[in-house]
Image (cartoon, rainbow, N blue to C red):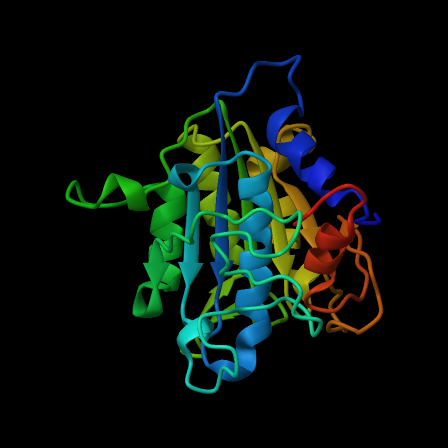
Length: 267
C-alpha cells in the first residue's frame, strides 16, 4: 500500500470503518518511541511527525498519549537547540508551536504524557489495559470505550517477535497479542489500527492475527496492522511504502516522509 494518501487513510480508519455497524464515539492515538540516546534521534522524530499529523487531523492532546524516553531538542549534541527535524532539509521544526514556516501551522506545543524512565513495557501494557491504581492521573490514561477508534504507533529497535524499550527490556509479540485481547474483552475499542516501525516488524503480528477474538471475527473488527519491514529485513533508504498485513522492506522514516509529502497536506 502506497502512503501518498496516508493522512486520509488514517482519518478513514479512525473515523469511518464499519460505521454501518455502529457509530464511534471518539478517536484516540497512542504514540510511542521506545529508544533513548542521541543516536536514536530518528525514532523520536518519527513519533513527533505522527503526533503532528494526528493533531492536524483533529485529535486533541487530551486524546493523544505521547511516550518519549528522551528529549532530543535539549540534548547537548543538538546543533539546533530546542528543535527537532524529520529530514535533512530542516524545513519543518517538529517542536515549533508558533508555525514559523510559511503555510505550516504551529501545533500549540507538545504535551508529553510519559517521559524518560516512565516509558516502560509495564506502563505501556497498563495503559492499554487500564490496569492502574485509582490515584493514577486521568490525563495519563487511555479513557476509551467500545465505541472508540484507536491508533497505536510504536517505533524503536526490534528483532524477531520483540521490540526493545530503552535497551533495558523488551515487549514481545505475545505481550502485545495478550494486551489487545484484554482490550477487546474489556470493551476498550471499536476499531484499532496498530502501526509498528522497526526491524523485523511483521514478526510482531502472527500472535495478534491468530488470537482467539481476531480469528472468530475474521478480521472484520480485529486490529488493522501496518508494518515497515519483514522478518529478514530492516529499513532501507529510498523505499517509500508500508504494507498492511504483507511484508516489505522499508526505512524507519518512510511513513513520516510520505505523510509530509501528501498532496495538499502540510504535516
